[in-house]
Length: 463
Image (cartoon, rainbow, N blue to C red; front, side):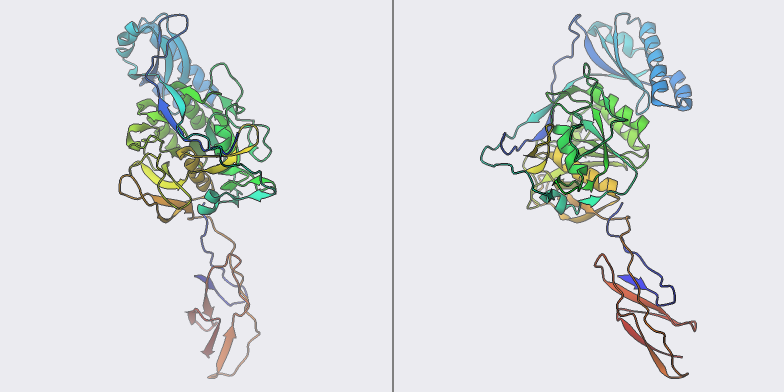
């Protein structure tokens, strides 16, 4: 209920409403292959090395800027490899913000020497991560381009489609974003590719563009509208044109977002695979810097707690399961709370792909950006619970709600009023209204030290 004070200047009491091919049906889960990542020239295996180095612990906090931290970690990493006697290692990415560490290709026989170095906290074998297309395209459904703005059912269900007015951005850690799509507000200043051999963050696959459209496509009279319409999306490319990448690439992307992002920004990770400590650590540390992560639960019909980064937990980390148009738990979705925070639409979701056309895809990859958009708009409210959750503990359905204030009500005092002492005077607030359609209550200040609150538009007071 809203409250109005019928004085010369009305006190407006605001209510919170919003915080702040053919038809393609693609299951956007991620599978992790167990094959060794070997150098083409020498029999070497790729590893992720996480450090606890005294020199880095002292100097990194005092270095300003992503590039300077990268230079420092690279120098220390080379020194560690030399000290450990790993003289033919191929240094890959270095990490200086979300975690301290580096990726490297070395002969497996030299692994124990590296693990024994006093600056090495732990070492994990790198792995290949590939998009899993386990739901085939449905040739029986024809996609139709909208003739004007289109609010897909998922955007409506989460109470999205709101024009974004804030200053934060969404970092899309994915296959890139289509630079040519004018319905997406793509940031090309901070875009970055960590795909080896491809310096462009332009989307040559389609997955990252689809995610971006769900989260933030513009309301410009022509095309799909996203949850936080018109918000700036920053492509951080970690998967190639085949939808494949390495954990070392993905960690590099998270490290970049941690360095370049601001508290209140959103990072969407519609990707994942088997449990990986380094990936989870990077996400958790970045989230503690104020970056809010929306993460796909995965599509393997198993526990999200055994997947990464879905299993990462923290105050700014939101792992999302998927449901259909009828609020039924998606048959492919991973499950389990924790780590899952919310459920969102993820079945037959229409959005853009890399060539600017519109396709319907399915997956927790599509559910996560619904929540990513909500996080940009503000806090999240709950509107019921999904049915048919595989763990028998229904996930709450996320919608917009929380701390973003909508338009205050307009108070009409009417008057002027006059009367005699000991005689009642009737006051009226007729004509008062709320632009958002919320109910009103009325707080009256009679100027003689007394007040009253009513749900009626009129009141009688005796002086």
